[in-house]
Image (cartoon, rainbow, N blue to C red):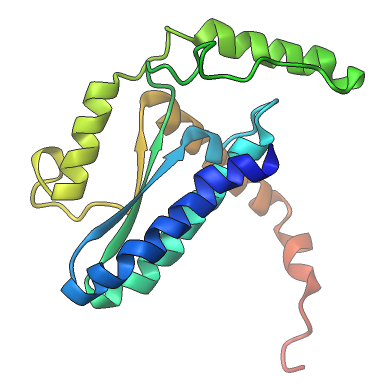
Length: 188
């Protein structure tokens, strides 16, 4: 499972980049597009490997963008929330099997939430892809604007990212004195 998640979401993208980046560098133009997820910002019971792979995708894209920008290329990650696709359908999901009885209750409840969400996701995939295309091409909603390299699509993604950032700021401010107490004294 671990290998499959990272092979698909992380290593697959890296292998694609290795294949086409030499051509993009030669042309000095182009956009590398990564598919991220709301999952890269939140904890999802039963989906830890998936969430980790999506967080990795965002950070790889950010780093790649910093490396590519000086030569006229860019890397963007589109982080989709729950869009009404087949992603949560029974045909796309591996059935939940409790391997550790201690986790059965919490994991079973999370699985039930995924099943209940299928067909009721708030995001419209047609609208999401249209916005994605606008950002990549610099048209429509992105015309004449400096577009971000991380794009959060869907109300649920916007809300989750906002909440995660608020919680992070609260935590680092509350614990600042402890967090910064581990440096050598100035001058040493």
